Image 1 (cartoon, rainbow, N blue to C red):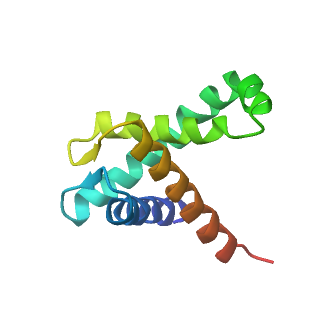
Image 2 (spheres, helix red, strand yellow):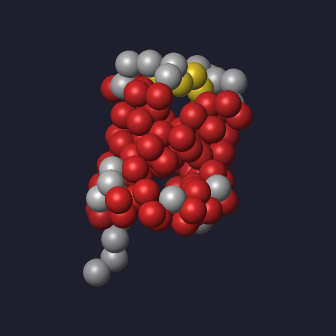
Image 3 (cartoon, rainbow, N blue to C red):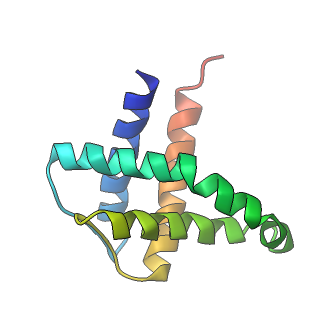
Length: 114
């Protein structure tokens, strides 16, 4: 159940960044939005930890700003895997990764059990 909720939230995050960030477009129906959320979730679980681990020196050197580039790269990777998600360049990818990260942070803070 928790995985399904995470997929739905990732899909809603993609819908949000497609509306807020110029240069990021999403096309498709509700089912494709769920598929997009699942792909984003899989990338965040499988690829992102490895890239983050290999990038620790750069993250420390830039005081965490390099992590924004990692988020943008993961969004570009998702864009290359999905036909309905279009990211036009590095700056929209970085801004989209920032907005998606903030969205996930707010949702997880709201849904946290005390």
